[in-house]
Length: 430
Image 1: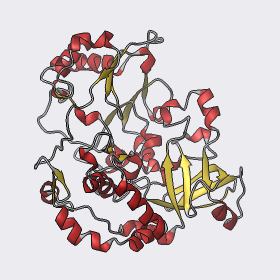
Image 2: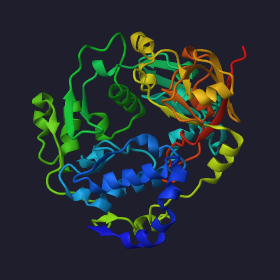
Image 3: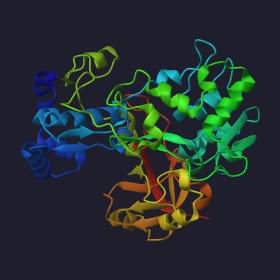
């Protein structure tokens, strides 16, 4: 059921004895060995992967290594065993029906993580018009300061479609009111569970608010785009999405979706691997052809090493309990439950800087500085600054945390490297 484990065993594993793993992770050697023994003895071990670990310079390799562990113990072949990141890939819907619109066969594509770079540096021609929906890049993008400098261009025409006057919307020439999910008919698939469901709107859109689909279709009509998707009703779109659908969703009748409630689309039968070999690949020829390491491995990232030598604290960002991202920032009772945007330091790091619980602090590195309120807790390790949530400037002392993050990509997939950020913390000086 696997390919290449012998090579990993011979070429990779000898470099990662428990003592070496302890050195890399900061765990004790005894804890490394105890965890390995517990995991190896488990009859049906299951690993629920999170996306946060991918937001590192070598996040792709980290995720891949963890996802291969059930292949070592045989857990992928046991009921209740294995590993899971997201379930969306099991929904083999016919997305071709709603994807590429008419227009040139080739267009320029911009990774939204580097929107600031594209707005400031792309030429021949430069980006002159921007339509933003369901996004708040002035807060959520890495190197948010660069993104804002790009959005602030006098010659850039920007339209933002949003239910609220977000930080990004303040850079817009035109702000269009968007319907919220409570005012919109939609079809949802779960991220981490095997269910899909039609979502009926609870109330009609307020005022002149429109859904993303309504705005897209209205603009397409005015631009003369003839693709069928721009004239389809939502029911027609559902029919097309399920036309030729395969895998776990091929049995779903789109005509019954509106009234069916939650639909279970859990895979039946044994574990399947969507690889060229059809097996779990410890050694991947596909990755080798893409210029990526064919086997799971770990090497120090040169940029991280340099940054860590310059700045003493590693930044970790994670969703807050009541402010997972900026979509809920305008909801007052959620803001109050979450509290003021904060930075959490270990007591050792706070004492070393003469800082106390509740005071205003400045987080800074070579990209700039932001102001937050300090919390002191041993829930974080020494050497770590934890900042929950991505909060707008006007909730914080000053700025937003992603101003301090680089826009460089991860090792695989061109993802964001938020967690490969290093900085320092000092008292806020008004």
